[in-house]
Figure 1 (cartoon, rainbow, N blue to C red):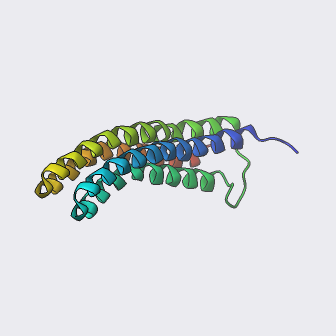
Figure 2: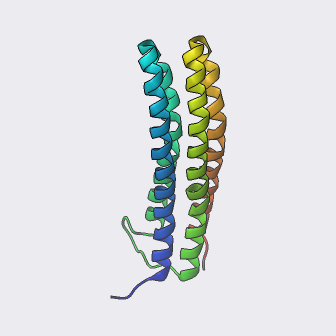
Length: 161
């Protein structure tokens, strides 16, 4: 069996995007869930409001999974030819890093903001709309990371290296 280092590097990038953003989201949703459970213990009618705040940090895991699927598709692992050069494999790997790193980091930061917003909703339920905006601002950077990783991964495909 002949090992293709380009495919291995590209595959590693996709796996890192899914793994790191998924870990960040799992930790973040868990922490926000703990705060949500405390809020609902005090006032069960807050369930719907705090559930949204708990779920927000979970989107980074979805974004990382999307980058992983896109990368696997582009390199031929999910059908087609999977013979790519070492340079192209390295380019795919680097293309996945924004989603991997920013995905994990933003999920963890978003959890902190979501927890604070849950505390706000617990004290002032009528402010739930405003409370959602705070963690949504952190989401902006996860979306930017998703966008740059998509642009890079799809851009590598057209290169002849």
